[in-house]
Length: 89
Image 1: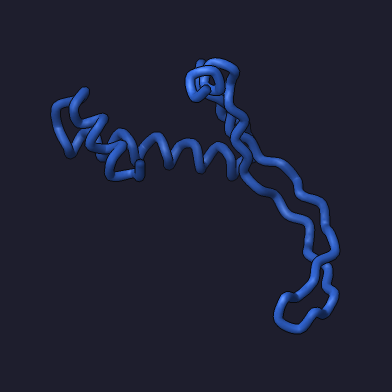
Image 2: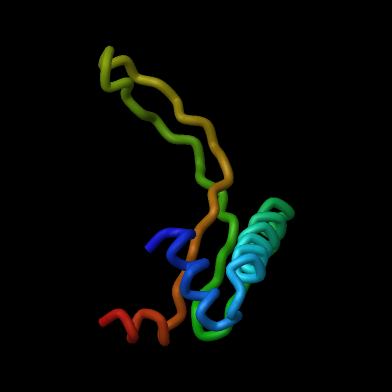
């Protein structure tokens, strides 16, 4: 399922494709903005989106075999709630 499929599913509930697209885009934009600020986003019964710090580490360039250092960075992470895990299994 991709974003267009989600918009179609929301359209069935909302009844209007334009409103469905605006709604889905708004949710994605607001989650992205919150994560950019370093905030957690929790959706009850679904899961939590958060930003975690990934430490620097050593890596290898696959083309040359040369050793290099991969810089530390922040990455988004999703942690599903138990209800979501249970529904998948």
